[in-house]
Length: 411
Image (cartoon, rainbow, N blue to C red; front, side, top):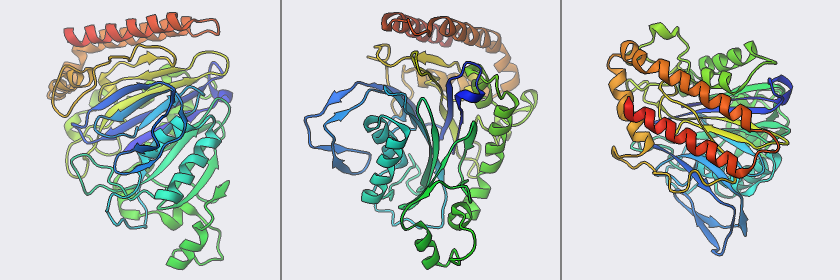
């Protein structure tokens, strides 16, 4: 489960693109923060999560947040200002479960490595779908968890929603604010369909061939879509974004990603359900936790800021600014399958302790956590101007990372 939303320059405080996502995965599936440089490739093939595909001659620089054990990524930004987040969606198209296709995370990372614009990224993903499909397990320990994918894709000037069902797909251009969650959401406002989307649905008996064609209505699986409360979360992120329309900034996006869709003073992780944007796993019916979170500030004439927690549960985390072209993440300790000294696992162990008496123990760290987050945001606001040098950006990012590490150690 995940939630992703975007606000275009027409509705943000500083006339920039604001792109936000919570990545919800299995609770102990650590999420790595990774910087990959631009590269001239000398090998002819590339190993993705399950299959190998032909490699391209050049791949672009990216900052990614990814499940530690996967090749693909949940979200990220590339050097051209292309930013993508994906969602699990549940459709009527069945899986063969041979793991002979690409995961949604594979396609997301491939698009970031290969595309200079949002439209190029759509072409990349739909081309990969046609060639390889998405018959690939998206789970970690749950090897039965297969799903199709939707994507929110943006660059410095425009944004698109791309939703898929098997090899079929549909796109919608974003106007101002748009949110996606774990459900198909494009009905009759589509820009473009895959060549066979309508005919495939007609042959299956899902569409009569005459009424208005709704990709959402025709392809959605009702049960999984409903149980996941995707509509509730999508409505929450949309409503909170619209409340700040014209004034929305990165701090607002962080607060939206931290919400539980319930009054904060009443929230208990043990009572959480799939309606929470900041998700806490509880049971078979609510198996996912937020394992990583991102707010990307994409600018036209100034450096992009990629705010990443690198830790689970945004409600207990601090967003750290990272910048393309810098070396802050070089040598960054990546998490493994077991508790270790990585930033992610240090935070996870703290969060487990807090969750046992959430309201009382959260209050022990919140004054410092919130003050530190405000300090980092103010420092980033002062520096991210067109004249900021890469050395200055790297110094700020490294300083912020160290401050968060120090805070975690004290807590």
